[in-house]
Image 1 (cartoon, rainbow, N blue to C red):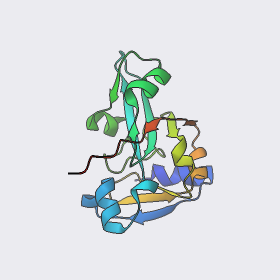
Image 2: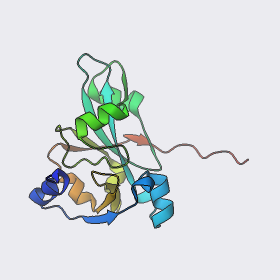
Image 3: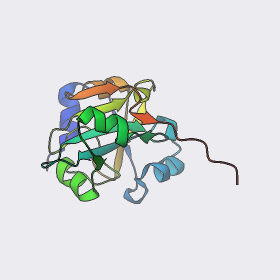
Length: 165
């Protein structure tokens, strides 16, 4: 089986480092806690679907400690009346990847990639690696090489701090 993720990264000339992980620890919070990475420099690739028929899909990349603004920014930018997070099944079908390993590179279906501007301010960012057994550590310049990438201001919001217990 070919590795579409690494093939696309190589063809784009992007810098990256493979970071192996236990598939049971692939979810961002568990990964960061176990392997000593910061959630402030970890990003989640989230597929969003319009509620149109047929649906329109886009992949959004936001820092793990922020929340994708799916109901305002993404909805408006998609030109949709309603949007929602794609289901795990839809995400797997469109990307060819399981949740916990989704990355913008090497998707089964080409997807537009909207990157929150905060991601681009990081020195390096940890993203999915295409499967649950690895992550990719990349400079933002590598993300910008994605052929359908667009940096979007305020794509995500910083959640309010939780009140003390």
